[in-house]
Image 1 (tube, rainbow, N blue to C red):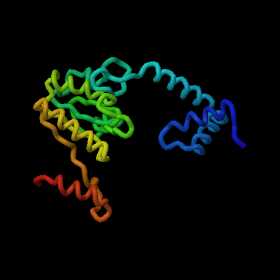
Image 2: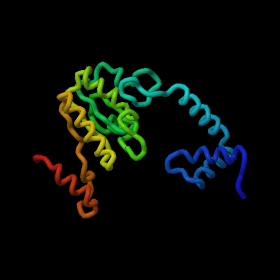
Image 3: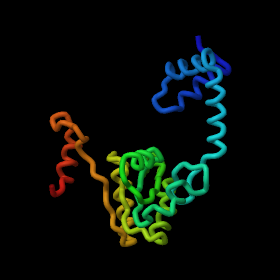
Length: 198
């Protein structure tokens, strides 16, 4: 029997989260309503607050509560380096895992004409203005190695070249501690082609 009403509405709403199917959404709903109503209230309020306060940074398009994010507002960052990523999650990953001290630009997607995602949807007009006016010396491409990510990287490389800006691509290949026999052929080929002096 299919449920209707508030419970069904909450189950359906939770399914918008990545990796959450109908059973997981039902389990979450029943847990919040049956066992942890205080947590449900906190979750509801935190989501409401985030929706009201969080938007995109005016310069880099990452998520922030202010007009400029902490990276763009920091005077200590190297403004000649601009790293292009597909999502705010990648800003966090690079910041947490590397010593990168430059700035970011978040595409919030990648070029995908079949899905109707072109340069306008990625804010490339904003990026173009930054490349003209902000003293960027190096554009670091950190898009994913999907077909769309590679197409986006090529498009951005051409854009940077028009402005005389050096373009680099983060290395892709064998994971640290990985064994060659277990690595897929495309990754191994990419790593082999991208080898450097040792």
